[in-house]
Length: 307
Image (cartoon, rainbow, N blue to C red; front, side):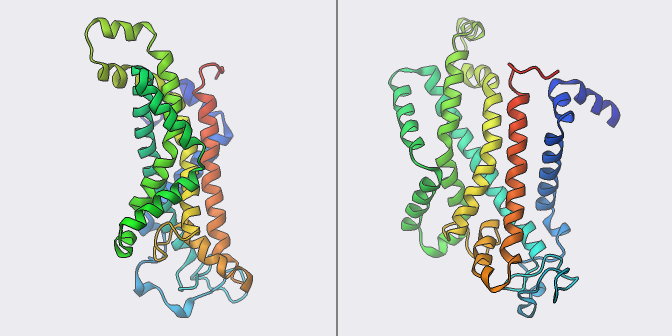
């Protein structure tokens, strides 16, 4: 059964391209392992960094197990609070991945909706949407996210902001990434709306909403999926940057950005592992997503021959 399923997948153009690309296979394998470890962090990680019973300040600043003074109980050492670095990185990657996936999903839904409707309806509505898109594209994503986060802090109390920090991050990153989806979906919609199947849909009396999101949208998903994949890596890096700057998740939440931020304070005092391992993990995560996105860009391009 599994062999037959594999053969069916391999016989498709996408499957053939995937299994014959070492970069795609390796990057997707690394990403799958990271996702699996993040989802089942409670099973994979030897300690729970949120459980005070498993954390002791007496274990703080323990170096990696292969270094002098290291302990076999802590493979990658411990941080300033005595938390196991390996467990903290696994739990931290869960926070970063949740923020990354949710913010890109939000940006994709908003950007595709505005882009498809602007391209199909046209007129003044299209002009307004695209001018807003052009203005926002001139503002770096990190600055837009900082602006949204600062506005949220001015309207929400500090205690409530700590509870809603993840949701604020998702909104801040998502609202800074939607213009790319809007531009691509609008350009693709302008091409698709002049094709015969759209004219036939109008003739049989289908509504504009049905034409846009049931007939046009499935035909423009390829470039959007590529943007979403590459945007996921950017969203994770943005979350880590905001947390590193102290405007992301609370310090008690072990995201990759907060781990790098606190580890940076001890970098020159000899405790290099506190910031080194989270930073390396972030690089590997972002690189594997980007490489997978590059493969998707080539594999989903109809102008390139796969076989």
